[in-house]
Amino acid sequence: MCGSHVLWTMMFSFVIVTSTFFSLSHQQQQQQQPLDPSEQNALYDVLHSLNPTIPWRNLFPDDLCLSAPHGVVCDFPTHQNETPHVVELSFGYVSDETPNPPCSLNATLNNPLISTSFPYLRKLFFYNCFNKTLPPPLSLPSSLEELVFINNPSFVAALDTFLQNLTSLRRLILIGNSFHGEVPFYIGGFLNLEEVTLSRNNLSGKIPASLGLLRKNLKVLDLSGNNLSQCLPHSLGNLSQLLKLDLSFNAFGCRIPENLRGFNRFGSFGVPMLLGEIPTLKEVYLSGNFLSGVIPDIWENLGGVEKLGFSEMGLVGNIPASMGVHLKKLRYIGLDNNNLDGSVPYGLLQYASEINLENNKLSGRVELFSTTTKVGQKVKLAGNKGLCVDNKVVGGGVLGQQQLKACKKTDVPDAVVFSGASSLLLGFDSLAGVVVVVFFVFIFTGF
Image (cartoon, rainbow, N blue to C red; front, side):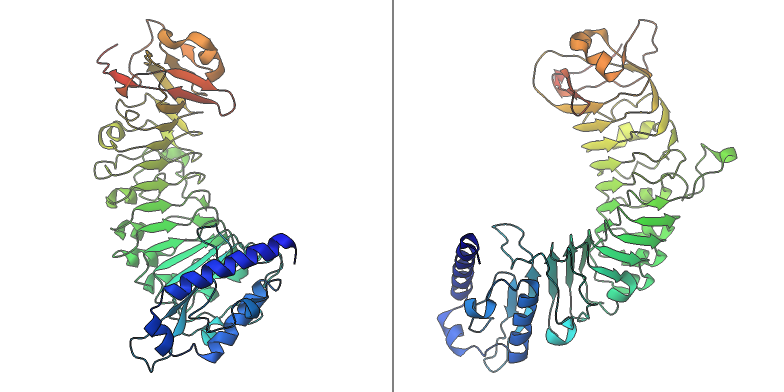
């Protein structure tokens, strides 16, 4: 090993061994039963297959429940005659604050039978471990409550086979791997699930309606960055505890026929009506799905929404005035790259700190006033030929760069007024194409 690797290993083992050692009382160390030998040897095998460059048995020769790398956690029975067991395994160096055992470039698993080797396991975590070598299919114990695989592109498996019998799961996080196939229908029977994040995999097919059965506990549903298609099941509206819904960048369809465009009476066409049935929502992302249709008037019970992403969806029609009335906690809104027309409702942008309305067909006057230099909002308005900006902020060539025109006295004053609790400055970031707007205590009441 190189000198830096040896130094890291020494520091790693010293910090982890001492912290683990002092976490137990002296009495526990003297009286605690040792880890089951089969689990001890299985753990050495896993560590070696993930990173054979580190002499794990030499660095940690003792009971791995008393002296182990960070990320290895055992339970400690209350009775002295009971044997402890490994209950958490976390692999892949994340940061200095989370120094899990690092995985080598050719990391694999020599013993894929996790279920038989660690029958009491409650958490399994792999971060950036499988990048080149395809590991064998894993057999997981039904005791798992947390299953986390992040950035393991060479880990290939059919999701419906991988998750079978994991009925105790509370958190399922599989991000940036190579899971394929459909989201299994039986996942609706995992009633303890609080989070389902399956983003950036190769999943296809439709979302199973059985996800609606997770209504009591599910708080996060993130299926973004896959190839899921067809309609969204209306049963998602049953998820009464949901805080975050991210279905962005899939292939959901349900496009409205041309002769019915603009009416959106069909629930699953356009922005799903079912969103209005989930008042707990704080984040909603549907960007990158060509759902078409209009934005429905469903916002009366969604006053808690803080982030809203409806970019690149083929949306048409006006932005509902009710969005400006009810979305008072909004911090981010993305409606860019659609076909929206009309004016922007007063109040919609009053509180948001990041706004993107680029490349639509919006029109009307945008009132901007500036008296100080404090930065407050990032606003993108380019690509709306019908929008105009007040002459008071034309200076500096901002309008030319944003491709916005200066308003004339004859322009219809029915667009958006940017107002709020700070004074307003308009500037332009040439790299990001962002108009920066800052507000001071000023309330605009007319044109």
